[in-house]
Image (cartoon, rainbow, N blue to C red; front, side, top):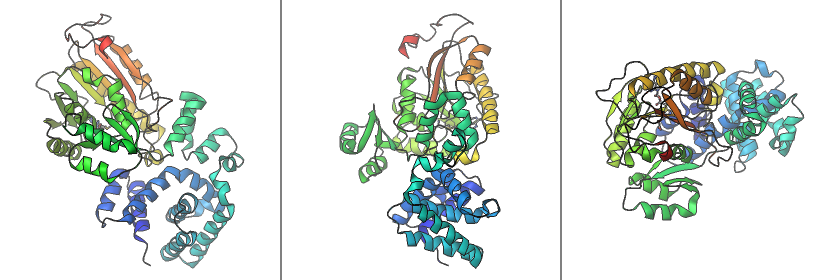
Amino acid sequence: MRLPPARRMALEILRRTLDNHQDLQSAANDVLALCADGPDKGLATELAYGYLRLRGRIDFLLNQLFKRPAQTSPVVRRIVGLAAYELIFLDRIPEYASLDWAVSLVRARCDQTMGRVANGVLRNLLRLGRAVTQPDYYRYKTHDQVQFWSAWYSCPRWLVSLWLKHYGHDRARQFLEASIRAPHIGLRIHAGRPKAQAVLAELEPLTLERAGWGLAVREWSELADQAVRQGLASRQSLAAQKIMDALGVSRWPEPIWDACAGRGGKTLLMAEQGKQVWASDVSLFRLRQIQAEAQRLGCAVPVFLAQAQGLAPLRSAPRTIVLDVPCSGLGVLSRRPDTKWKRTAADCAQLAGLQKQILETAASVLPAGGALVYITCTMTRQENEDQIASFVQAYPQFRLLREIQPSLHEEDGEFFYGAILHKTTSPGSTLAGTIAHFREDNV
Ligand SMILES: C[S@@+](CC[C@H](N)C(=O)[O-])C[C@H]1O[C@@H](n2cnc3c(N)ncnc32)[C@H](O)[C@@H]1O
């Protein structure tokens, strides 16, 4: 059978990310790169991301609608689940179209009988009507709050329980609500460019929120695309920019070692502010992306391949170390919804162990008077406040200057944790004064 291209691409993205454990963004990039530009790419992206955001709710419904849910093959569940996503959440696709492609595909992959089962399940879903878009439907069919939230907010039970335990009812609900909303598009306008003000003004009608040179815009537009292509703006979530600002980036002493630089979102934010930054990461691929982007934007950023734990391959000491550490990524589920279906509690513990080692290395490399910046995009106490509390206890020469908790009023739907610490000359001493312009009241 000839599958409509958007569904073919969406299923391939899902296969790569769920079965082969490829990161969702890179799976989407790889699959979409093989296809011609056009509306199918937009629909494929919406289907793959939307399905992953709401997969828990869809699975809850499918468990009720399949006669033998546990025996149904994962392939069939995924095809029927994707069609269910279209039927429940996408008004612009006619119902017959969703049924047609899904039932034909199940028939082609399995047999006539399974095709009839898929058809029956999807038709019974349609009979439930708008009820399945309301929380009460799930509330009355579940036994307790964890199960209800897990179904309605499409989130694994272990994570719902963890957030309830660590953050309480209101914050946990806020995190869960944010995790199923599509995120806004974040842009960073390059302040140094002569046209920067004009770009801000042009994007004003599309802007939902602005913080300094950072914007959250409603949707991707020709204007935004043009600004990025002309090197006047970069894509970066507003929450990622705000955490840097909240931790006082403009006042961090230089040189700065960005030891988990990734694709360089934060590295380039610092470089654009005129900071001297060295960037390292364990991924050569990501370092090459930083180099290419730095060149395009006209910034000079030395990059090198290195682990942030163990021996630091530095010839001279930095005065600020930025650790945007590898973490469980549970604060950015709206942007990376595959994470919640892959992460386990054991991963969080393992990542916390790595973060501890990375912090220990930074503690030994940073000279007295320097600043240590720790950032995660997750929400587990183990990787955030507990990690920093244990660090300060083990290294009393570090004083916590500021800690930014994932905020209750976060409009962006993304949650970062950040802390900035100052290394004093001796345990318990006050500010060392070796870096005169870096003072507690500056941050
Ligand atoms: C949260 S991401 C960094 C995002 C980046 N700072 C940005 O703003 O775009 C964490 C990065 O840590 C890197 N990483 C993982 N393990 C590492 C290690 N042991 N040492 C250094 N970097 C590591 C990953 O490759 C990833 O790029």
